[in-house]
Length: 542
Image 1 (cartoon, rainbow, N blue to C red):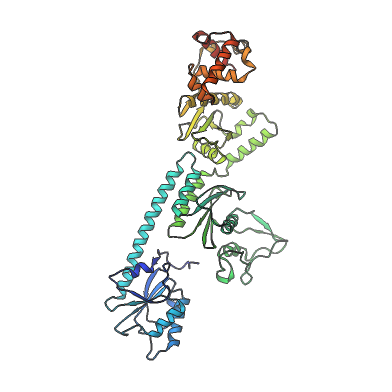
Image 2 (tube, one colour):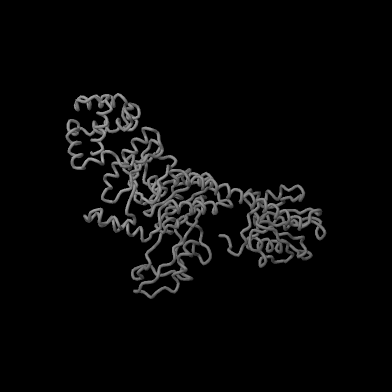
């Protein structure tokens, strides 16, 4: 675990430093591990450098501290203290004190697994330190460029019609791993990338549960005693090795808040819920981020390697997903819940509509461009884009109630049919208007089509007389909805066989057969514009 006192400098691979020809460094002992990294260079001639090291240093020494006649015991103690302090490597300067690296030092570094570098006489320690900082600057620049490109890519994905999956897909690609969105009930809503091994997958699921909001109070009676210093909880199987005081880092952060809790038999305040957590299981790096909606959504990430910038990139994705996973629990959301409960208990819709916050509404029917029917995530994203949480994914069509003061504009990837603005008691009629507008929009390949709301000649006829005339005229086909729907669509599309077939998702020959059947049953010439006008007048009343 990284010491919080250590400055967050980007690590530099030791191989990159050895590759600098201007330095002439040479590895003469220790493991040849390509994963060895150093975080800075530090020169010291102390016989015990332990108190002056933070960890991750390339320690530089000319051997001034080595007493005359020093034996293997001295070098063994010296190297062991460097290793205990977390030193990454030791650089030994040849001349002016020593003409060669002491053999006993080489043997001690080999035994303790500490990389030992020979610094030639022409290379000063300041040159080595400068090279380290140059490599760090290059690493920082590469990290910033990577984070910036990832942020732009994630932001572009968030503008897609169905943004949740594109954001997860881009995140998995940028991290070269697996990303998933967990619902409040711990189920995976969506995922992208190669899944982690089963053990790591289960550990990541467990990690997400630690980030879920807990009850504000927890009864002390019958529950495990609070953790205290000296009696840490046991680490879970497969979790990260215990840190200081034997408590795993995640558990320690969750349990420290319980020290000094209320006496048994009383309620104590629950510890704060962490916003992120990480672990490593079977070589797979795991991370989980609680989304800021407060509803329990969690972003989970699993990567085979952890590189600088991963946390920043995942945090950007978490911020975007927070905006895409719903609205904060507010008075508006509470009012919607109240309206739903009243409807379920039998209250008429007009009496609860005021709880939804608008007097007039548009009904919107939407169909995605793809072949697959929209799932709840896609429907929720559509509702967010339209500015409404009142969404109903009904089969292949998504229905959304949108307040009239929210403009409905075309959306990429969707075909929309919009009703006129109506009061709650007219919602059923608006639903019919939106359905017909959507059918026409699909038939004419228009992104958005609105139902007309201007006054018409039909308004001059009393509604009762108009309804009676419509029922009488359409009686021969009223018992067959397929015929009335086909006739209505065909007339609305000016008698186009192909467009009607597209709108109804049937073959054009089926349209021809149904229209011929309507003409026969109605005993009417459907090529006559006066007949068409009269039938259209009647169909608008049904």
